[in-house]
Length: 510
Image (tube, rainbow, N blue to C red; front, top):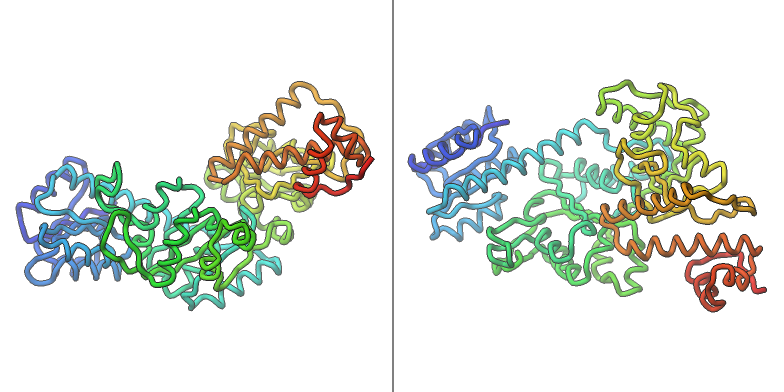
């Protein structure tokens, strides 16, 4: 880890911070003026920089400007007297991480420096992971269209709306758009608006002032300030609360915003890229999404194809993911036989690329040999294909990979299998263990959706459950909905309404 730089013309402040950080086993390097620090930046970089704002010669603001121009990922903490709070505001607008007001409590100063250190290390890890991973893999025509669009947008700062099913790689495309844009040297900040509680989302986006609400013990920069000069990626924008949509619209319209509890208008120089798996036009018609915000976001739209539309990419993606998981576990990469690869390429995989990655992780740990055959794949996938019960859950997201999962509960995309038209007319009786299996799958699917921050979990899974029951009952009654209602123990009007709501075809009156 690189040292923490302390820049202050006051020797006593340098000494106090050096000793306090040494007790925390943190390395420091001190400078008595900004010019020496600027010269040192020619050959070295700090992990975190702490600087006084007013010093003889160059000021802390000039040092901040130099650091942010050359090393935008380095957090800078500005030390200021109470009378310099206007300068502190200017420091924030210049990209400062936080400020320390004189006289400051040493313990609080160390705590603040630790927070900046954690963010610096986290950003470094993200950059390293991004540099080791190819941006996007794909040879299918549908993906070539996406690559061409990214190329055309490479020198643009225009707002982009990325649509596509869950697991298709929307964040990867957003990162590629940033990497190939004029803002590439500035921060890329990602925020999943569906994964953060409504009460916290406003503070996450716009930051807050000290005392703005219970627990706000210090001022905090929001994602717009963190992304200054760079790109802010707002994932699952369709789930953003309606009242926050108004605030986002204002930022997109005039580039200004306020922190929560703040009175100082801040200017945002940020490119916004939004993504959603939902149909925003439908959300607008239902009154759940502002039409003016929709038009503000929908300047350029990029639709990502599902894996079903690019099956020819499954082999290269599989080989890549198997190589990655083998590298992580320190084992030899496994090979998928031609028959097994054809089988995998024919699967529906509603979780798309994310589900395929989880499947490859499962294969690396669970498949017995180095060459993987069809029989070595998760049993729920193999038996599901044999019985014609492939999954068709558009809202499905695979669970995070866990090597302790059995085949029935692995991250390979197991979910409640709805009625399939090609299934045989007779349904074999299930034993207690099989009945328990589908309950486990339901629990796994619910846990996955909840951990991913999906909205309306009860509604999504409830509709799938009802659809499966009604379809299987209609199959038993050869499509007679009144007989199916009797078998299910519900009323005729209820089953008629459900068939219409769920879009179930093939039902007929008795």
